[in-house]
Amino acid sequence: MSFPRALPLRLNRLAVLVAATLLAAGAIFLVWQAAHNAGISQAERALDRRLQLFSRAVESEIEKFRSLAPVLARDARIRDLLLAGPPAAAAANAYLEAVAADTGADVLYVLDAGGLTVAASNHAQPQSFVGHNYRFRPYFQDAATRGQGRYYAVGVTTGKPGYFLSSAIRDGDRLLGVAVVKVDMAPLEASWAAANPLVAVADGFGVIFLSGRDDWKYRAIAPLSKEALERLDASRKFSGVDLSAKTPLFDAGGLAPSSTLVAGDLLFRTAAIVPEGWLLLAASDMSAIQGGASLAGMIAALFFLLSAAAVANFRQRRQLLRTKLESHDALERAVAERTAELAREVQERRRAEADLRAAQDSLVQAASLAALGRMSAAIAHEVSQPLAAIENTLATAGLYAERGDAAETGRIVRKARALTERIQRTVRHLKTIARPQVSDTRPVAFAKSVEAAIDIVAYRAKLLEVEIVTELPRHPVFVSANDIGIEQIVLNLINNALDAVTGTPNPMVRVSIASDEAAGIVKVADNGPGIDAAVMRRITEPFFSTKRAGEGLGLGLSICSAIVEKFGGRISAGRAPEGGAEFAVALPLAGVEGQRRGDAA
Image (cartoon, rainbow, N blue to C red; front, top):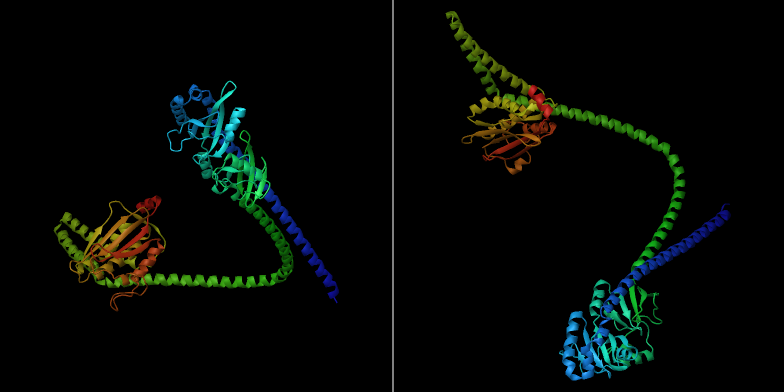
């Protein structure tokens, strides 16, 4: 039996499948990890560029005012105020107010040696700093001990945050006071919020005081120690803000300069603002990085799936190949049989098409002969009248010949000859109409063929007392058709128009020729009752007729439509300006060379 050998084979296949699956899973994880690390590296570089840009913006904003405090400290008006007391306050206040307006500083003010404000640029405002003591502020203490100070804090008087730059005012070794410049950082913060809110600045305690996001403001980077909270409270740096009630941005630790930390869905990068001892933070959304890593993992998974599918497909194709080879001969036989059947069907279809064309040509010929039958009276008149005239003319010529009047005899003979040519022209037109339809095309003078058709029906129109009005172009129009077909079309349309105006007061049929860029157009219009909309849709159907039984087969317009289609033209019907029906036949214009051949013919 083969069972004992089949079982180990199945186990081997299962082991290979499990190993391949584990290998593919490990490779997918490595691809995801590599894409994730690459995304973080790229994001770090982008954040570093952003940090550099924001750091320059902060330093530029501060640098505009950095030298202003020392300048104020050296001004004579400020020194006079500290030496002379209140009498010099008005001049100092006016000076500080003017300088603040010129430089754009938020507030300029002067503290005496005890920290009491003795002059300020906002002296005339409700929240004036004058009379307030800021001895507790580190910027006063640093200036008093080291000559200069800088400090960011929330104003205890206005509640408005700002950056304070201070410079000591001395008389020798004696401290007279401190000049202070308050810089409003709100415009810079607003620009961050508009451009990229994921940026912030933290002070030396690790408390964020500038940020494009409101929920980050006055939050600590990491949990603050008890000592730090006490020092901040003593300096009233963030007056009115309960720092302990705000959740730190990170659970523990914090960020050192030029470090990276992933927190939640944000990637943080930091940089130091050295002169101020601040830490600048910028963050980037991790969703793009994670999405890129996931996409790479999915592509790797898809690759392995496609590889597995390719292997399975290869095995299946190899198995199917044997089946295809076996069925190939049977398929070839079936194809050969079907090809023979198709060949027979094509031959039968060609015979049917030939029979259809022959039947159509026969219908055209029958319609032409029927038209001749309808015009038998006109034909008899067109032939008998000239014959009677010829008989009388020749008798008159005989009399003049007996008299020896050669000139008059010649004139009368020429008149008889003209009558003979009229009979010949009529017979030629009738032979043309009776001739079987020819489907070849050549350049044809449109007006000439139309006039020939009008000549044939002229006598019938005269008997019916119908006026035929013609509107022919000044320049010849050549179309790609043949004269027999054009005459049959126009003859049928005019006969239909004559039938339509029977019984109409002042009956009239108008035949006009025009052309556009692509086609020559002949229109046959009448002032009869017109055609109903319901009838209009069926007028070209074979055997459809509005005439009484025995007056027509209903093939005229159908045959006209078939002839027009053979020439590559179109036929349409509508209401004429005279109130009756109007039929328009458009045939393609012949080329320039064709027109020359038509002229020559």
